[in-house]
Length: 332
Image (cartoon, rainbow, N blue to C red; front, side, top):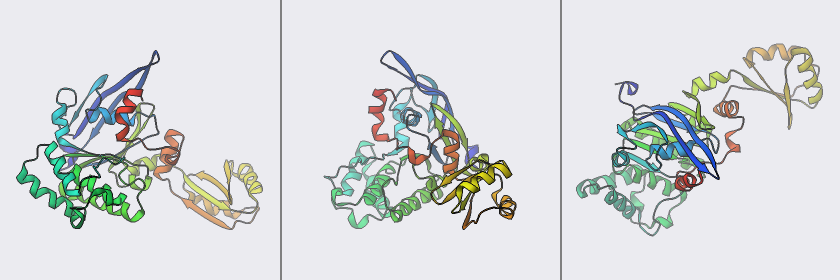
């Protein structure tokens, strides 16, 4: 069955949150409409202060909406918060394991919190530790684990009570490329094998490419929501980079001859045009200066983010689920 034809795992309508701060009313979230389908990897991107954390807090029942409504896993976040929490898993960006316990003990403690029956617990824990390749270290103290091992254990722990929706906050931030690939292997396998829905924040645009759809939020509103391919197509311009020892002369020529605005870079110039591959032969036919290097880059999600928010994702710093309660108190 097409996941889009099933009941949404997240459905928000007019979701809003205001805070009072120093005599002012701050609209952190301004009427968000959002639908996440079952079995979907959904990316949630935006600058700091955009309202991402506040939106996520409301979806996870850690913060009450000021207006609108939201249902998660079929349950109302206001009327049925306990049921919502039973159906979601959370993997924080900041460490949340007890490092004084072993990997297995962390899993057992989580199972007890969620009321997982002992027979199920004894079966699921070995399965999940095996899935994340931690069986040989099951009885090792977590404080002896690397960052990548801790992240894998947190993912396994988040799945222990069989959630239908997993929230992942920056799941690979600070990890080496090999461990990042390994984490994504697990995430994609969870979707393929178990139909798990995943709500993801990430600071790596190449990771956002794995998402089925992406929402970009800014100033309390969702300003774009589509597939990665459609978002990139919406930018519509290719980036052309030309390496030259005479950038000023080339900039003047592009402006005079082609009416194009370009920018000087460290070793040449950069400009944006429609269909760069078709434009290059015309450009190179009458250049007044020598060009040592030519590169054409199709739009990326980084370009999408820059176009929509006016900044690159690297200019931003991650929103952390672990800062949820503090940010809510400060009215962010």
